[in-house]
Length: 327
Image 1 (cartoon, rainbow, N blue to C red):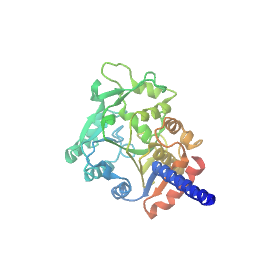
Image 2 (cartoon, helix red, strand yellow; image 1 turned 120 degrees about the vertical axis):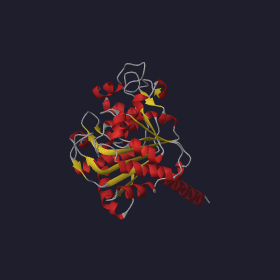
Image 3 (cartoon, helix red, strand yellow; image 1 turned 180 degrees about the vertical axis):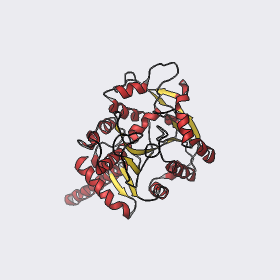
Image 4 (cartoon, rainbow, N blue to C red; image 1 turned 60 degrees about the vertical axis):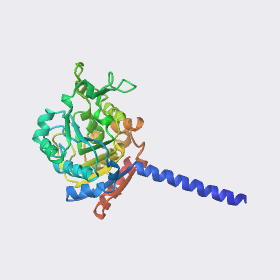
């Protein structure tokens, strides 16, 4: 009788561990597809994620419109349009694109890239964050982070039911080292707020703790979906120019850290800067600090890289090997 009880207990423990393992894999699951067709690739990869969960939900959308330079400096218009169609197909509620460009005037960037025309066509709203009043911002406190006195983050991303990020795959020569989803969050932080003369972007870009401060932004808002358009990538310089490679990949997941770690592994696969290449991926400042803060997964072991089609299998295996050895 005791042997049966022990056997049953072992089965229960085994099942419990399997449930935990499956849950862990889901948390760090990242889908990858190799494709020659951007639209088809995005549609296929988003089918692997639960877009039905966006039904009736208000969505805050953060793209990469830091400048009007062409992809991979900025979100490709086709990528942005495909995501919009998916959200509309899921019968989402109100969609707001909120953006602050770092290198040019935001409104002019969006006009040059045709985003206002797209808003008229698809019926989403655009908020130029540089033009927001003080009521549009939430003030974070010092709270153990590396900002002098906290910073201001757009309330749009705090009030939305769902947050979607789409970013590019590239390095960053102005101190960020790489700019993926964690770094893309800088565009929803205020440079200045009415009544406050402090320049938060000057503080960020002159600080020796810049990469830690980037990670700390992500502590204050949720993300439900991240998609990286890696059809092309900058493997040096960045964010608006650099040596271009063509991975022809789309990457998507729900965990910012997992997605960024996969992005870094792809940069390493193609041969990138010393700052991005050296050391373990989870010891890179942005990823290490984000993990410390509980933004997402805690280690490379939690990443489950899932190829979407047969053409993606080989590159997925190569990237997995890099993550296993260098994560």
